[in-house]
Length: 305
Image (tube, rainbow, N blue to C red; front, side, top):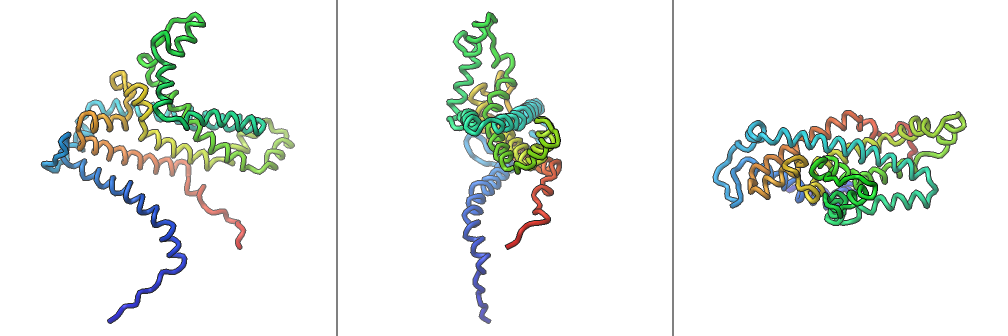
């Protein structure tokens, strides 16, 4: 019996044409590495890249045999919450509110200034921060303090968490600033005019008009930046190298150091798998907390062609 092959419909062909390359790239660079990571996590692979047995010892070590992991998780939680709340969301929102209140050219200028660090290479940005907090008399901070009559300080040794929060926060605030600025610009002007006619002040307008109107953007930036902070460590590595000791070693940096500095590839893969699980749980909790499903629903009344 011969079977006729039905041709693809136009809509199906369009989906394959436009989504096919993206799906292929996701499978190649995300799905396949994740499968490989899971496979390595249950081996004894070391620096010689040889696998002699499959074991669950790495998972058992991660769940109860690694004495440093609890402290690493505490450092990561402090770093993520402080950077996210104060800078990536809070300061980004403040910058958006202030620059949209200015004339267009002045606002655009200040936004461009805040974007410059994100456009510069990570090494250059980290080198500038290393100069700022250098404990010698040539460090920028100590030069300013000396001019004011204060003694020199060593923030990298005495307040390393503050250094990495500031370094990551100032560059991370630019992302939220751009998203929030675009959202504020899209709010209909008549809502602001009506609020002012009703006697609302600027703070009342921000609270009752601006913030409710950009709720989706606030939720998105919070979730996206929280997940980004969980897996990023390049500025911490370049500025403090996770030190002193392990005081600024976040989870992602700990994975890197175990795998590539200590040659414990299998244990590093198990730690990376744990990071994926934690990220998925955190994303689902935040998705539910911000009620993103309701925010992504189509409007009940919409124009149809």
